[in-house]
Image 1 (spheres, rainbow, N blue to C red):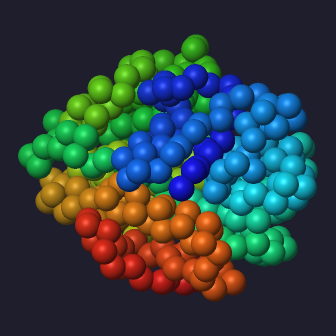
Image 2 (cartoon, helix red, strand yellow):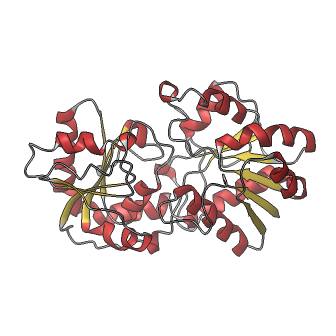
Image 3 (cartoon, rainbow, N blue to C red):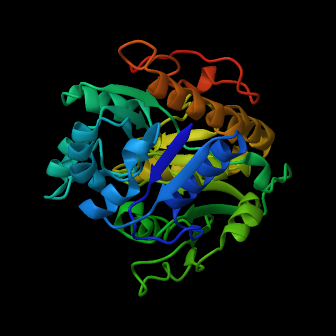
Length: 352
């Protein structure tokens, strides 16, 4: 097949370590290319002449990874009738109360794209609830688990928040919350939009920026990752944490695609400080007994050996035009019934 992947044109390729969407696109290209497909990445600014110069009608499928491009690409698709699919990575897509004033027009333009490859069942259902008439599948993000260092021994460090320091990730909130909890230590890593914020001066410390190799090598030194943001699509750092053997303390908004019945995944109410502290203490205390099982869960549910073949089947279903009105198998994702690491069996789930 001849495939065009569309990025937003604002970031370089190959991607920077902290460019999660760029890295996803880069991995998709590598996976498809290794299987003999011809893959091009279009990474230009959203201008009509850039789209026309890309000649999308010459490809078997065009897969966009940016909501904002749909206002341009969807009308062009309607004229030239090429196969167009979208994956939205916007953290607030399904959290309407947090949309900025320009996003409604952007979101409803995404509903004109004939195929959606959603990052979660919730995102897929949200589209249908808002009148989407196309076909949609669910494809979680993925990593190569073996690239992430893993030490089954008890972690020497307690907790980490890995991600850009800004209000959505709630690092300042955690810094204030944990100030009186002297037994807890939280390290913050990532680029920052708040250079004046260095932690609370005691047990929450901003330690700077890790490159990709440091993320892969050093995450396993921690017992717990915290992600209590007020909106996420499907955070790759969560998968990396699982690969490294970390337990999770997450908000409901960050828990997409996770099997929340597992004892190392703690979903907390961000408005309940006592619950957050109790969950963090428990996760730290219990992590050592679960580390090997956590790594195995990541391999079963989120490894590229599972997600890659799933992506290829979705692309083939779109190109071949087969399957049910929902796009054929496999379009819903249930982590506890995930495909095995060889990518063989697939189970249809429920949006409930």
